[in-house]
Image: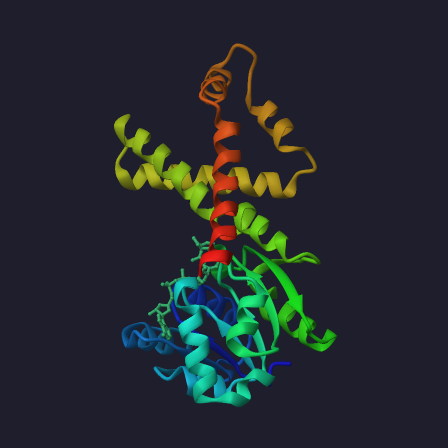
Length: 271
Ligand SMILES: NC(=O)C1=CN([C@@H]2O[C@H](COP(=O)(O)OP(=O)(O)OC[C@H]3O[C@@H](n4cnc5c(N)ncnc54)[C@H](O)[C@@H]3O)[C@@H](O)[C@H]2O)C=CC1
Ligand SMILES: O=C(O)[C@@H]1CCC=N1
């Protein structure tokens, strides 16, 4: 499978995470090509990972066996239509898209009756600790297993039977690293208010998050039971948790996740 050439169309944050994971898992760098409008990003990718780079999307698509679409959803129509105009034969290749919101039906309007996997990774992919939702359409078993391998270095893959679930995965894992970063940012700010240096505050918050996440991932206990282990009756944690509860943390989290889903659904109809 490693002999397939993989082209990334759009070489921003997400493409960089995926390329980092691929190269780390031993995918041959010479079989990866990234195309981008911004030459500076390409130079950094070439230097960091030894991959091929180009500013010509059509060239990248032509030399590839698998084309990973990684531009912003708002640019996807223009990028796909320009690629197909430059190289009509590419509609025979396997496409993977990481864009939020856009359904398979839109790609078929732009590229013809293509075989495609919608993927929803997240940024911890770059250190092999990501979650990727995958929804295949008209793909062979070989193609599905190739895509599974492509994302396996990113962390955990979750294959979906229903395309609507991709929007749910956005809320649960695609967008979710940002929720945790926001929570950690708020904690760091308060730690600094308490007198810790910015460096110490960040290190303490990150280490606590790492410890809690690792413990939760390795434990058979539920999140509620793990929380109970920390919470002494009449103690400090109880006061903190009751403050979150009084300010409706659970309802806030649910509303934020529903807002992410609603945005993805709106993108499907407006882009
Ligand atoms: N950042 C994230 O956590 C995640 C992002 N995604 C999806 O990944 C896609 C890319 O997002 P990011 O990497 O965050 O954005 P980004 O803005 O970092 O990367 C997009 C790249 O596309 C390049 N570009 C713009 N027009 C182009 C063109 N005509 N041809 C070639 N390259 C062009 C830009 O220069 C930029 O480097 C989006 O569709 C997003 O929905 C999916 C999951 C997670
Ligand atoms: O914010 C976004 O739209 C993208 C999709 C998931 C994470 N980032």
